[in-house]
Image 1 (cartoon, rainbow, N blue to C red):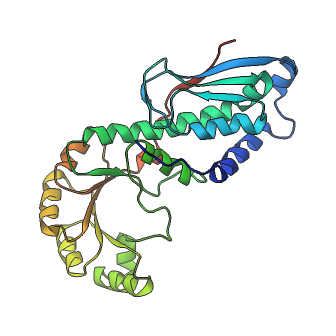
Image 2 (cartoon, rainbow, N blue to C red):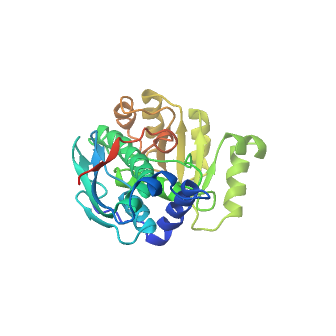
Length: 283
């Protein structure tokens, strides 16, 4: 899998802010009072459960920002599948720096690996269909680019990155605009020709109206597999079809089998369980 890493200039501000939050006003009181300044250590980032690595660059950045003398030897890069006991990377250098950066490094690595692992679970479940799993804007504040990167690492695709790169007309927009047609026509008049327009629909009647307006994509919200199959037939390739609403690994195959193009899953970023990864002292 060839996933372009995020540039260091994007990663560093997130990691730096997290380290500063942790260091507070006095630094690492525990480590600085216990560990001699001259002490060196070798530690290993270890997987304690199966999953997919994501966010390793964030973890390594944490160590290097605390002490550039720390060296990191990568064993399994982002996108690698992990088994319990696998070594992800070996960290060697000043012991104080390693211990001070440990929690920040693990927070990023465990969380982003959890997002990637959850995404991979759904991607694998629908692998025999044409559908792709994608994320939403339901991301943690300040971590959107990181979480959306982890989605890609896990085999998923990204929905819009913010309010400014696509139009998604939802039920409240329709209600305030006075109807589907008014909302779509105003959106088309208000954005450039390169901006895609997607419309959320809850019923087949709304979908039929949407198709007369030539939207680029339809978000089929909270429809079961049988209704989705009918909806996909109505669309007949005239727009991208995206299913959403309480999609889990166990329900994803039936939803994907309906013929939709995308499965939109918000919990992958806002509620994914961390992957259990630890930093073990080797010597």
